Length: 176
Image (cartoon, rainbow, N blue to C red; front, side):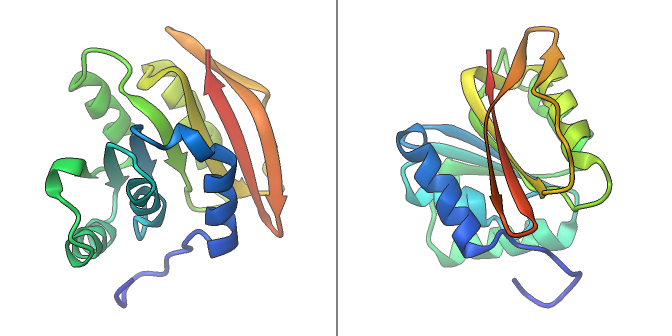
């Protein structure tokens, strides 16, 4: 990450745990990396066989850094999209641009302490951009309590698993 605003990237051991737990779900998946920061989760997904990743972050600085990282790694632009927008705007835009649910995996790692994890999960359930049986992985402060499910118009997100790594929690939801 180039110098600029402070970013809290996903720790290596947490990123490794995410991909160990998801294993075969990544191969061929369409992925959304929300609050993408450095793009580490989406880039890892591409390296493990995801077919396409949409990176979304509101920061011009972050989107530029992701673009530079993807270019430095020689990743074909046909395998990714970059969206510079605030979370809710990005989700609404992605819903309008598709004919139905389009993401098999969604990673979200919002800044801690702003209730953004819960708000994002509500929006994902409401706008139904996660494919049926798709998974959402939320990285958040371990003190943030998340409900067992989020109801939306076209389905719900149901908690499947939760893991803790120091001050970080990973909560896995499946769309049903």
